[in-house]
Structure formats: C-alpha cells, structure tokens
Amino acid sequence: MKRFWPWVAVALTVLLLVGGGLWFRLREDVAAVAELAQNLDVDVALQRVELSQGAEGRANWRLVADKADYLKDEQLVLLDNPHIIYYQEKDGSEVNVDAPQGEVDQASGDAKLWPDVVIVSGPTTVYSDHLHYKSETRDIDLTGNIRLDRGEMQLTAPHLVMNMKTNDIKADGGVTCLLWAARPPVPAKERQQ
Image (cartoon, rainbow, N blue to C red):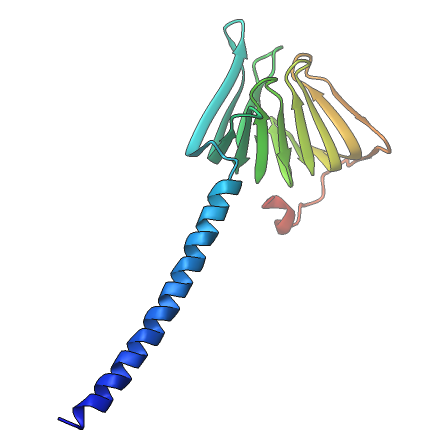
C-alpha cells in the first residue's frame, strides 16, 4: 500500500496542474469573448442576403450578397461578396457589378463597393478600385485604376461616371483611349477577372 500513495500524489499533482491550466485558459477565453461582445456594433448578421430598391413601380437595383451585417444606428448594411444589378432607365438593360466588399446606406440608398470592382453591361466591361452609387442622381461614380474594355476600344482613367438615367459614360482626369482595327488576344490572366 505504501507504493501506491506516491503514484496517487503524482496523479493528483498532474490533475491539479492540468485543471489549473485549463481553468486559467477558460477564464481568459471567457474574458476575451465578453470584451468582443461589448465592442461588437453589429445589430443583425445575415447569410445570403437579397436587397432591392425601386421607384414608381420600377426597380432601380437588386443586390445579392453572401453575408451582411446591419448596423442599426448608422442604418448601414456591410456586405461580403456583393453582386448588384442596376437597371438603366432608358432601355431597362442590366448593369452587373461584382466586388469583394461593400456597404449600402439604408437612409439614402447609396452604395459603395471596393476593391477590384468589375462591371459588365452588354459588350462593355469596366474594372475599378472603388464604386460609389448615388441613388439621388443614379450615377455610378468610379475611382481608382479604371479600365473600360469594349470591343476594339480600351479606355483608362482615374475617374469615370456612368449615369443609369441617360446611359451616358463620362471619364476625366487623364483619359487614355486605345482603338484597334482588330482586337489583340486577351491574356488568360486578364480573361479570368
């Protein structure tokens, strides 16, 4: 029996050390979660979200995102992987927009998307760093490294505005436009964008 008590003492010591370590770790984790919950400003978090806005019985835009967080006090919807379809007023054609991140202001209906924005409208594809949709004027205001490809034409500019009422596109601030008689092949890397 004397040989048994040293092993019991060792086992109890190991259990106390492991239990104390686990207790200390659990206390830290609970404190971290409590601190995170206090700093969390998200009122609602949703998966696979669909939003739309319209006027006078006509849709202005429709948005689908993988995830959305709604900040009630700011009336702001934060988006992961948003896809927005804007409808042009003149002919009802679609302007499809994709980006990794974005936000929609519920009060104004304005939207911002970033980075690596890709816009496809018929034969036109536009790449941009940032997009700001202004609901009141129905302008898609693009900034950053903008490249517009359309058939045998490629345009680059730091600023471009697409108006959904008139279908007009205006670029400014150092515009470069290249025209080809026959479009050169697009490298595989660029085709995947």
